[in-house]
Image: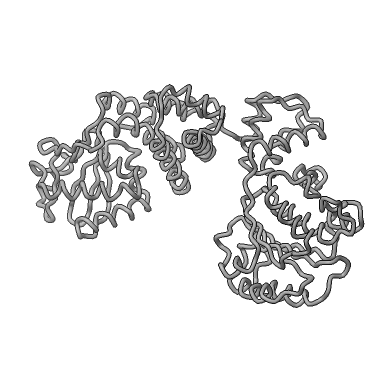
Length: 508
């Protein structure tokens, strides 16, 4: 596929007028050119697909074009403009820092900048993905930026400004590119489908624009995937081709969750074509927009309709709590071998905000002294060992208060770092056999999660901090286990737990 058939290359802006969404930057650059006060170094920072490299090329074109318009736009027809558009202009040097990131590459630049521009007024260096340069390369570049020739301009484009040394940033004029609004994306989209004569329905158009997520390039990449189908695609077909979660399905899952229909919510999340990463990302976007709407009152028909369908007023603090759960789930997805389980646990955590914690803000703890004895002896007789095999819930009668306090401490310490593990431990018991800490859990999927090496390492560190001992971790499943402590639940707790187990398809 050549550049002419790649939409984001074919419709890359070629002058300031065609660039959409960065008016504050364009206005400043035009003013500098008009007044002859151009800086020697710039940083263009922003997310991908927002026009950083495009504007850098346009700026280079305006600096060297001999026939600028009254509005400081390059003419686009002179030999310099045409050479820049084709990538043949000898005084515009583009460097990919991802593959040319070493000190030798920067030294080569430093040696060449001593020569005057061959054709234009300025020699312009565009360093893309500048954050990928090595520390030695940055040090060499710093020296170059301190005393550059007047006819040389550097433009550093980056998506990760935080990785650039402060010494570099302080010597450059910095511009932060904003993500494109849906309105700007739609404007750009309409121009392209009109020129290309694509037949695309309004609902599919809205889907593509929305999932551009502030990036012109991402939006056009999605358009490219469906543009060449001869027949007009239905919304459902477009969703499948783009690999996106269905908006209606996503909203239905969260509406069920927030209305207390947790079984329906979990059943919906178990359906086909639900991609965990996309689901979490889309959910983040949904609740982010809901938060902005609640705080600012800015009109957003999408989230207004969503809130109307929920039928309850969600507080700003609860929206923040939901967003924190979803953000945490992104990290959990990277580590989990069970992505669907991670999604479903996030749904249950959100459900708990409204139907557990709000009824009992301070968890009432009940010690199950008679139901769940815990063996904590360091030395066991042969009778004890054989008895333990037949009684996985423990041997001794009653739970010593110090053991209860320590177990509560383990649970509490796990909460800030791993809510999922904290939830599992609340519903579990344990035995201590010598230097082995034996977790007794009610379900097999609890065990599957807890015996992962990262989970065991984390639990070992918690136990050492509380019990002041190093343990080996073992785990057994016993559906009749009674937790050492019971965290009081809402009136429907038992029925809901049973239903959740069915949805998770738990082996008991």
